[in-house]
Image (cartoon, rainbow, N blue to C red):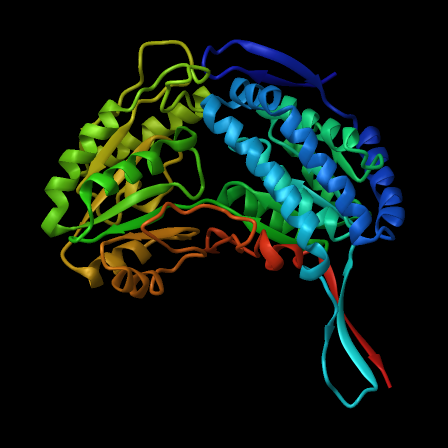
Length: 455
């Protein structure tokens, strides 16, 4: 018998064990989901919306329980866990209220007496989801997929199986029929056979570049649609006219939120030469002052990383960057304490070819890069295998917008940290993946965009 074992990253102690499903149980769950689809797809948007509003209510009513669970399993500070649950409820209500218009038939004038485009569900969609936003990542996929009339199967990360089970129960508690949303507690090695199951019609993955390549390859061989939201090494260009107090506050939050483990976190700060030294000095003060402590501490700014092995891998990247010529300004050591803690770290004077410039640092480590002018800053920002988010910080919004339009990323924000918002599409380019989630663009990823012609 196999188990998924969850570990509290703040203490290193085992939380609980969750029994893995056998191959037979997996096939049975997928079959139930397929059977549920045959009835669910016939429901009207209004009928689905009623249940989606109930799910939002379940999330609100159990916010503290769910938040504590997320914090316990992956180390997110408790205040951010609460906000995550609130955002999940927002997405439920957003799609409950807008799907009928987002997927409304589109009349197209032709020679026909009537011709239009309609959007129909396609079947059972598999989601392979990460641990860093254990509720939100799942809800972000499931809500639009289900509102469109599909059913959803979740393969969640091993270390947040408590969250996965809680989400499955939340859907049932809200009144969704059995099989409309299901959790598969399986090891990653079994994902291939799930994708190959004839009843799975599409796959969405949020995770690392290697995981995305593997899943997309298997899905491609089976001619199944995929959406990939992969890693990022978001660059923020800081211009000489920016308010450094405000900028360094944003930079600290951008690097330490979710304990530095966010795909769209600010990771590379490209700072114009005129303010480089001042920025680095003030930023160092604020990163040093940020409180690292037990994530249930209401005053904690950031807590431990999700797992010790991830912390150790990050530390190796820091050491490699230093060996390549990067300058260690702050942090850069493994604390002598229990748990997966890693201190706020700043690496400066980074250049292309260094680990901290070229690759994603998924933890509380900032890369600071010097640029002589706007053009070099844009070139350095775009000199990346990733293209998920990006930002510009400046007192001149027109100048910021002009630069934002030149950044090679799925999102570019001026004077604000990149966020995912249900009203706007979310996704990346380059090795950050393809396809979009959220808004009208996301809900249309897993539908049959169908032409109807009546002569």
